[in-house]
Image: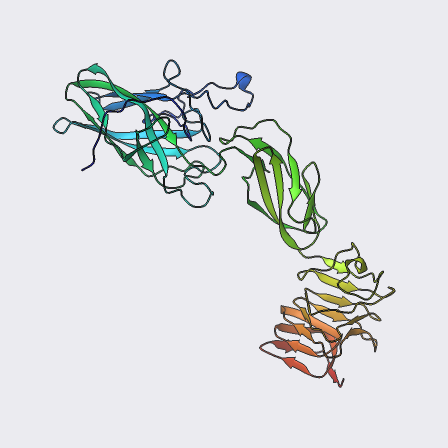
Length: 436
C-alpha cells in the first residue's frame, strides 16, 4: 500500500518550471514577468513564479492562477513561464468520494516549447519522465481538517521530499502527454485547499541552443551540389526558445566537404557528408549537409598521378560519387596508382586513362573516343562496370560487367570481356574484342 503525507514546501531550484496544474485556459496569466516592451531578453533564472491552484470540494473544481506575489525563486537547467506559452496543463474528470476522502482529477501535460522535453538526447525518453511536483501545499483554506497528496513518489526538486506525478515519455513541441490521475486525501470537513506546482523535465539543451534556418541542432539539410551556396540564418535561443543577442561563430567539420564563411554562407566543395556548426558561448547549433557528386576535370598540370589533387581543376581529387572528364591538350594524361572507384568516366577522343595493374570501378556511364591508342588503357587492371541501367561506349581494357549496361555506341575492348551477374545489351552497336 502506498503511503501519503501532508507536504510542507521550501523554495529553491528546479529543472523545468511550468504552468499550473489543472488550468484549462490557454490564455492564462504568465508565471513570471514578461520582457519589458515585449523585447526578447535573457531570462533571469531567479525570477519565475509558481502557479497557485485552488480546489473546491463541493464544486468539484480545480482552478489555477499566478499567486499575487512570488512564492519563491526557481532556478535550474531551464525555466519556463506562461501557461499556454511554454506548456499547457489541462485537468478533467474532477471527483470526490466522501467515503474514502479521495479528491481526484485527470491531468495532461502539453509541451509548447521548441525543443522536446522528457529527454536528454532528443531521441530517447528519459526514464524519470516529466515530473509535475508540489512546490507548496496542499493547504486547507476553508473548512477544517487536513489535505494530503497521494503521489507516485517523492524527490528533491526545489526542496527535499517533494511529492510528484511522473509523465514518462518524450514530448515534442505541441505534443500532449497521456492522462494521469491525481489523488488527494482530504478530511470530510475540508471545503477548499490550495497548492502550487512546478514541472521538472529533462531537456537536451538546458543552456539553450542555436537554430539554423529555424531548425533545432542536428537537422539534415539534404543535398548540396559542389559550388552551390546556402545562406544559414542563425538565431541564439534560451532553453525555452526565447531569442537572445550574441555573436555566432560558424565552423565546418570537413572543409573539403563544405566551407562556411563568417556570415553563415555554406559552399559545397566535394562529395561527402559534413556538419556546419554554430557556437555562441555555451550554446551550439548544427546542420548536416550531403554534398553530391560533381564532374571533376583533369588538367595534368603536375604529373600523371590520378591521386594528386593538383592535377585536377579545383585541386581536388575526385570522390567515389564524382564523375571525371579527361580532355585532350593537357601536359599529362592520368594513370591510376591504386584501385579506384568512381561515378562516370568520359575520356575525350585522343586522350587516355591508364589503369596499369589497378582496377577502375565505375557506377555511371563510361564513354571514350575511337582513335586507336586512346581511351581507357590497362595492363592487368580491369574496368568494372557496376552501375544499373547505364551506358558504355568507346575503347576499353579488360572489362568485367557486374551491373546492367547498354551500348551508347560501338565498343572495342581487350579480351576477356566478362559478364558476371550483370548484363550488357548491344542493341544495334558493334562489340569488338581484341587480344592484349
